[in-house]
Length: 157
Image (tube, rainbow, N blue to C red):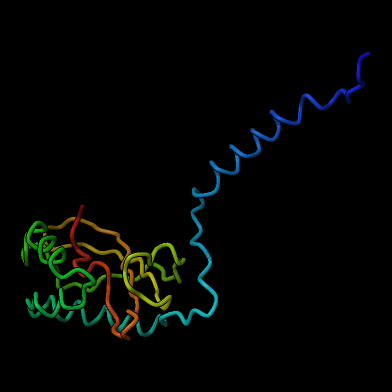
């Protein structure tokens, strides 16, 4: 004796697999930043601009210790500064702030940070005449200190 099945039941598995594949493919490809975590007190744009000013001032004074002292990874900062041509590639012309936004939590993983952060997208021309556009992540560590992920903003990768 045959059991009667719905004529559409053979479609369930393929349609489900296609839906899962589409969700997986589109899940991480959005250009929009992810939403900040609940309870986040983002670093204000004024505070982030002030820190950018401090970075530019340290660079103008050729003070690598102060510049990389603002870095989450000072040794990596100094290595990037050396590979970027040290002060020869720095331009005293202040970078232009293109935009600023509050990043999602995943951007802060591994930084021993609170969720207080802001990303500044900046652009300019470095001392070698090369245009750059980059993002600087400004974040507050759990101890309260405000740092940046990459103070050598003028380096062209």
